[in-house]
Length: 278
Image 1: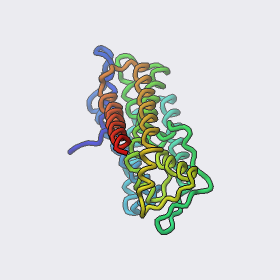
Image 2: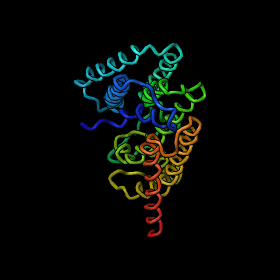
Image 3: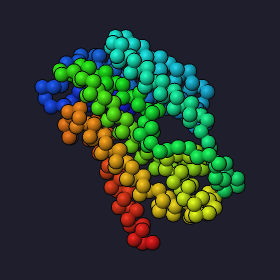
Image 4: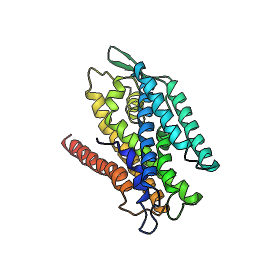
């Protein structure tokens, strides 16, 4: 059975530093922490489907069961007041992010024509894109407590910030892949809002049944900016990894950051070809 990548994050964390600074954690305990990652990941995906309107009611009890199993694992670890204070803070921010998304403006579409909203969502701080998934960074943080040299407060902050920037970059990359589907579903994202605002600025009509203008605006107004933002977020993640004392080629960077950077390079080359042909 192929496991989701999040299963390996705590394991990868324990091998991120040089030899002699690695883990002393029991394999059975590490397996529990990693399994908790899977339970949380599955629960978040089901809950997220309800937020975007595609949730299936028969899966809700399954999501609740996953979340309960996750909480059982983490509360039985007796990780101390400081950790559980952070734990509750990250989960509270997840709840707040979900509440904000639930009332976020959606596009009105009439016979394929997109009607511009009166109020626009705010994507000024792109790091906020990690708020709905940052709880997944708690697993690696738990694993960090079992390093031969336990991280101090500065190192713990660097680990959390690594995931904050990495997960924001991942979400932005996902939004760049799904920009058209999101637009058709009326969802305004950090990517397609660039298309919408550029069209309004140029007094253009956007019609999903005539996608030529929309596609051109994505290439000219969105693709380059988004690539730049992803590169910046990846650079900031690498900076935090360095603060945490991680090796440059450690699995967390190799498996999470490097694919995003490679995708940006490919998109920039493709966009360059398109603009040359134009």
